[in-house]
Image (tube, rainbow, N blue to C red; front, side, top):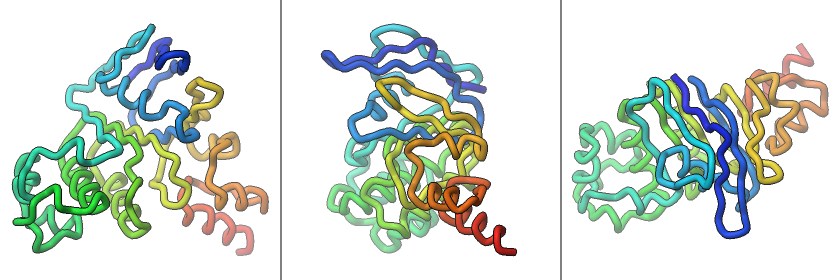
Length: 232
């Protein structure tokens, strides 16, 4: 199972992004500066942005979805319970997972953006997909909710997940690291070997490596554990 970007060129006016690579099974983290083209690439991989050149192919990917940065774009249910049911999920269990117990009869669009994001991601990740594309899934969430979403990503049954983010504090376990650099998508490789080459790595990772530690993955706890091993 894989999603293949074959010689893509994506353009807006005079701006262009080149992407060439294969996203196989696992969790792929794609980072880059704000405005570097992460959303455009996510949209192209999901089939809703037409590339200027090149093609996107999907092998073994029958059910896939895109979560856009702004959750308002996804709402279809008038009430919170209607939104949950539109995903064919149990209302009570989903409310608990999203931390919205007792709010099933509220109008969906009266929720704050953070609450709506929690609801949307809980519903999306509660379904079964071959491939999930997440554009800035941590935007608008506090640290507790970011950790909740990371847990949902790590515990979910989704063979292929691609996360586009500039998050620098709370991240899930990842299998591969990619970066958008100089208007091109660059594969840094598989984790943990890719971590030293990751130019956009969070400060806690770079600090751990400066101390001589070798984190096994990209979370804060991985950096902390690597530092602790040095002093065992």
